[in-house]
Length: 224
Ligand SMILES: C[S@@+](CC[C@H](N)C(=O)[O-])C[C@H]1O[C@@H](n2cnc3c(N)ncnc32)[C@H](O)[C@@H]1O
Image 1: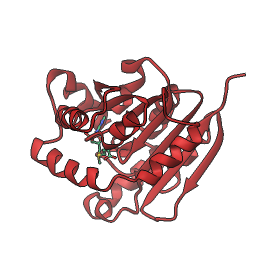
Image 2 (image 1 turned 90 degrees about the vertical axis):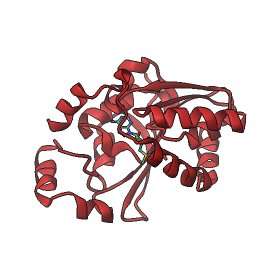
Image 3 (image 1 turned 180 degrees about the vertical axis):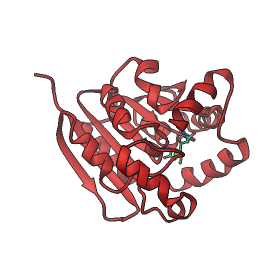
């Protein structure tokens, strides 16, 4: 509820940006250095190639993955709430010769309404927990996938050390009881997968080898 009210008042389209430029620059520098090339190659293989594929980087931040997908030939939409990150991605894309990129600003929860389009790959790394409501967002997420399309979600979960210290246990209790959250609580491990399994999926591979992170790759069923 608090998050929903916040979302009504703070509009990125009116110039509001939750990410200070200095922070965005520091985070970006680190991310371009630690890009997981193996992950990109694995997704490329599962898609049968990135060339000409439509990719959505949802909550893209500095756009290190947007740029990497674009350089491999995909048509990429960089979607984020932050203009500072959008500008950083535009600068980096120019430096790195990534040309097949477009940019949209907005809340994760509104992405299907804003984009009104579906993608071969929806890529969502380290930002699921900024959604207002996990159940509603998992539906939004599916609306963004083409039938037969692929998705990657990587999110820190409620085991994440920093999170445990910074969020009161009562908020977690209410979140687990009601599904509604205040602040940006990280979902308990396995929650995101449980929501997705209510959707029409064909294949879902989950990796919980690091107890602080949920990593999911899944495919939306082809429509019959
Ligand atoms: C930890 S960063 C991850 C960025 C990028 N996906 C990566 O892998 O480095 C979280 C991102 O979520 C974005 N973000 C935060 N709240 C958001 C919201 N409500 N809607 C859309 N994006 C949001 C931030 O601007 C930031 O780019």
